[in-house]
Image 1 (cartoon, one colour):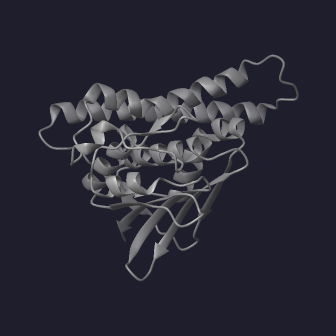
Image 2 (image 1 turned 90 degrees about the vertical axis):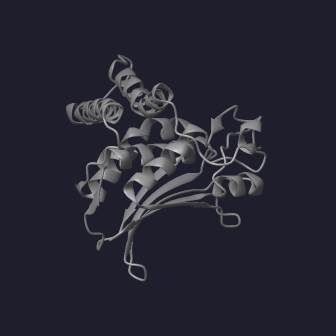
Length: 243
């Protein structure tokens, strides 16, 4: 995630998050699955790659298929929202272990090329999560994308799922080993301001559409989204759902 050289853009002086325009949001939400499809199909078409088994080819094909299905669902949801007077939310029981494995699979090649390790840690006592899988998928994609993007080579990104007994909540966490978010940017995010961060080193922009998508979806799902940076421990993005 963004390093300490990140800065707040001029747009961040406007308080309150504004809904992301439909076309921009759709393009942003399907970008990650599209990138995954391009990456994995490129591997599958690489005639120089040796010793590729049918099993491995099927795993890559499954990731491409899952990404395609996710894009269809995202497009359908945008159409549903456009024809409805209220935000569309369709909750079902989600096995987060399987959901998490699929989410990490989407970013497998991107992380590998960058030299970032991906880890999944789901507590054995984590019950099914009753939520909207389309909205959850959009949130996780944005959280993972930013975590990988701003984690240096040799770093790691952990996706965790655990049950917080003290507050009777299901907690989903994406934690990276990057340099963390600059204090001024983090405070602006917590105030709900429109924040765009960038670094001269990476030339990436982050926490623009992504943070707004996560925040809007969290409100629709009545869950808590928090973002913080423990000292020397990267950045932690957390979703907290009522059990």
